[in-house]
Length: 387
Ligand SMILES: NC(=O)c1ccc[n+]([C@@H]2O[C@H](COP(=O)([O-])OP(=O)(O)OC[C@H]3O[C@@H](n4cnc5c(N)ncnc54)[C@H](O)[C@@H]3O)[C@@H](O)[C@H]2O)c1
Image (tube, rainbow, N blue to C red; front, side):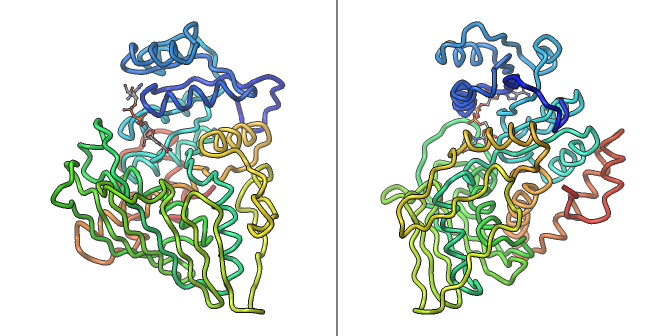
């Protein structure tokens, strides 16, 4: 379907990937009456069958691959919940078949692959949205509004300390924290300060007791386009007194400070009489997902749908209306650029310009891409991909 085609029935979803997160998507799709699950593909068919059985959906067709199911089930869109290394192939195939995609973060395993997928979304004229699920959090929206009351912002700091024992692909990744988790906090920083990353200095390291093969801890200092310094410190092997999965945050502006512990309502304090804003939302989010207008001091805001339930609703809304969702791949790619710039800085032990990392990835994408995707890439006049 095209983005604004009117369809007066639930939209048919074909889900690819039925591992840990795939099970969450099955539950989320089941709970949303605007979407109907018509098939599940997983290279491990037994995994797909077990997930469907557990969800009480045993009659839903399964297969190993998207290609095997796509013709049979006449889906309206694809949910890509495969491992990061498979995102490129699965999403490209779906878009090529004319199917819009909502995909799990990260957008792709490399920045070059990500740019190719942004171009594929343009070439085939189908929406590709990344489900950056931690954006869909009413407390974070409130924190953003509070930050706007602090006057000119100077510093944004996030701390993330947890100790999950996952097993599986994360334990073997080269950059488990930065690639798989910090992307959420990097994406939140862009959202919170409404600015794009300019440069980063980052160190990744692996504490002596870490059970990860790759670096499980990091500190990164980003310069944002409005001059704000965003400092992220995180560890994925820190037992005891853990932070929220959303990290804990401090924003420091010319008139005051705002704090968010990631799990409860944020608070802020400004010098008396100096409070500014908030200034509205610059059409940053789609009409459907406008942030609430309440204040933390007046009690909890009306809860928008949280997590992947929120991103799925915004995706469906965009398919039905043609609006641009927050997680449109052309926007989300800048969060992934922060990740890869941080990794490059850590590797080279140098401050790295995000534009340089984007430029290199763009050259690689142009070398890799073929057909309409290559043509779309060739039309770009700026390395901020057109939305
Ligand atoms: N938003 C969040 O908070 C959050 C949380 C966890 C995971 N994730 C993301 O979700 C994605 C999946 O993570 P997971 O924990 O479920 O991984 P997982 O390893 O548990 O499951 C991935 C599944 O995809 C299948 N698969 C891989 N390649 C495939 C292909 N080409 N075609 C069909 N099936 C394929 C595998 O067989 C496996 O069953 C990752 O991108 C991860 O970063 C997001």
